[in-house]
Amino acid sequence: MLPLTPLPSSYRDNDGFVFRQEDKYYRFINPSYFLHYDLLINSGLYKVLTDAGRLVQHEEINAASFQQNENCKIILPEQIPFISYPYEWSFDMWRDAAIVTLKIAAQALEYGVILKDATPFNIQFHKGRPVFIDTLSFEKYEEGTSWIAYHQFCECFLSPLLLMHYGHRDLGKLFMVYPNGIPLDVIKSILPWKSKFNIHVYLHIWLQAKMTNKSAEGETEKKQFPKKKLLTLLNGLTSFVSGLSQKQTKSTWDDYYTDTILGNQYLDAKKIIVEKFVDTINLKTAIDLGANDGYFSLLLKNKAENIIATDFDSNCINELYRKIRRDKIKNIVPLVSTLNIPTPSIGWNNEERSSLKERLSADLVLALALVHHLAIAENLPLAFIAKWLSKMGAYLIIEFVPKSDEKVKQLLKDREDIFDEYNLVSFKKVFSEYFETILEEKVGNTERVLFLMKTI
Picture 1 (cartoon, rainbow, N blue to C red):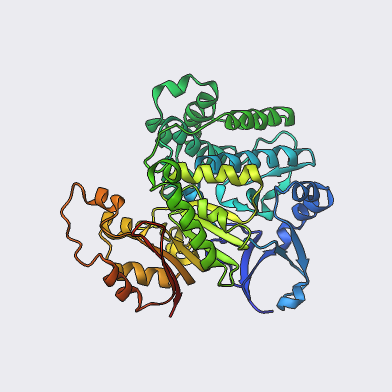
Picture 2: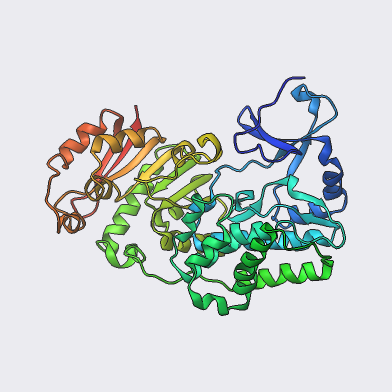
């Protein structure tokens, strides 16, 4: 029997683990979980959840094909093209992930099953919607037991949502610091005092924090928790979470394509050129860097199988996610990311959750109206930018915005112009070390230039 190597992120569960072989991800199941697995499958719960798109589908694989004995199970889940992490989600993504977790927990009880885990790492955004990916998170329900994952749900889902509701839309990123859940004492110290007068916040945060402290001091005892009461808890949480919204704060980029760019003529000209460039290459995957509200990501939705749309502005990404959800778009994953401070590798040995750099790879990279922000606003040398982009994809569509452009003038308005090398000649020279230019075209009546390049 050959050993199988668990992924660095799959070490917590004694009942099984995820492993990778030939670019596919599998899940190994130990005999200790067979009772619960069989209940999930034979009760009808698996079919109900997968039919509803709430649980990832899988097929069972003959263990012998992996040179394993028959005293185990191996399943092949439906493959998720891109793995995102909660601290890269916008508010509505967080909320939808929380709601699907609660609905799964309530639905499972109808089949004599309880959901034992409520971490957002068990959710991925696939085909435009949140889907639960941990098949080993279901156990046989014992009458009278409480929801074992309740505390975890409050620290991992409810806490970030409340921070974004009462505070700032980007406070979900705090989850990167507390990936096992933001402690309730920390949440209490950040939430405004008025939140205590909301009955749900009081019960699930303030009171629970008090009870947690008592439990740590050995002052509590376990009590019977009838199923009816458990369902009331889950349904109440679902209703409360569904009614949450992020605190409304307008950003500079909210209306970028309608109010703050050079006008519809520029945008139409740019669209025509991008479409012409794209039609010259074969692509399955694309990355849209600095996507804003996803105008060009949406332009590619009928040309690429999978598209990653990233922007640092969570308002814009949230608006894109709403479009994806409303129009049932299945091949765009929106992502909140500050490109010059990308998501790092975190967790045990810095291997448990991979960096954004490790995950971003595609046939085509779009870098439209981006370089001047990186080069001038963030002081990144052009050589740094070119090398970084060359590692990401086979093809690049990139826009150069010269100093004569009003947007660059705004960036330089209150600072010294130390960017002597920022010009079209230097841009072409630096990028030629990493890319071959295939097409080049000026955008409408502006001085902006679009390039289609191929990585050398």
